[in-house]
Image (tube, rainbow, N blue to C red; front, side, top):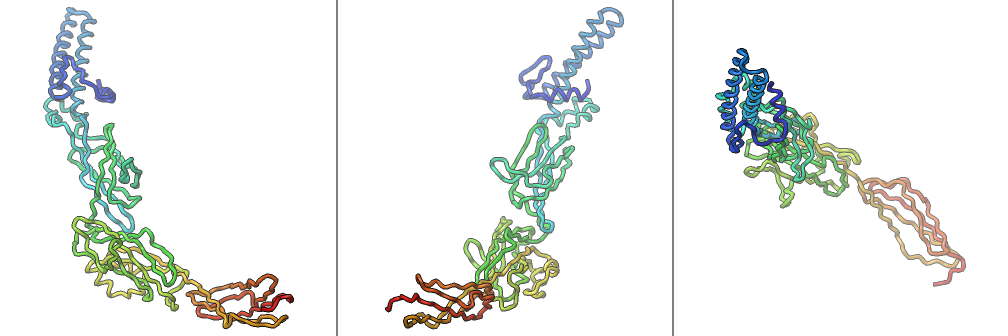
Length: 432
């Protein structure tokens, strides 16, 4: 019988080993069960060889020889089945290392896997099984290991790695295999799903940060925001430690005009920060970057257009290089030349138009048949020009009104426009 045929026998659900003289303890002590099956096979083989000699001398019938051969083949199958029960005892794939690394703006997870066979009896297998057969069975190899990474969800998370699944053709004992996934979602804890030998393991793993990059990375979920002049805009930042240096980092911003003030804050305490040092064992930290926009742009930066700038986490060496650059006019090439964690952010300043309506006199006295003619002033106290201002009056019933001009094309910042208003009372209006 071929090894492939024997393997097909093992594809059915596990049951008690069926040896000739079955002992219930053979399932618990598989090596002893294999020894028993080996002795029975060798005895059946000797009996078959004697039967062949007897048949050659016409001392037994062909039927008797066939029955002896059948018993021998059955004992051989039992022997191989007992051997395979040891060889293919449930293997165990272990995670040696789970490393989170950064390349550019992308995050990756590098997994190192190795195999361990839980059966200590398999070590002695070579003493009992023919070496050729043992090489064919290949007990030190776990074939077809499928690996994927999922998010940390108690109900079975979604796959968050690219590629979604990696197949390892063979995982050999003593030969760890490393696979790499690109993270589709930035997380610190993942579930590693490994399927092999008709089983699936899904341990939760806290990712180790790759210190070889020697940076503290900076990320933001809101990299581009709008803000009205005179208000404050906040960016939530996530800092991750990819360095073994415990001296901390300096927090800086480059590329912002001087009129826009900025500061880093602790999101919990609100304390202002100029530098950051990670606590013992901590690998990530959240910060808030607050920008205070001036009430007026003063012509130093454009309105209604994206204004790019960068937030940095600088070690001592990078901080020294940063001081040599012009902070408020930092270019994209200069930002990329700084060997430090950084994130590109955008602010779109928006001006606000505010109109004040002024009148020199809110009280008028007229004679019967006369009209009220007055003048009002529109003043723009906001931070952007106001265009297409349409004016109208809301007179009492039966009164008539006229505004000249009805449409003001533009009121500039700090500009004024005078508008005439005429009110005509009804002819039968009473006095008083």
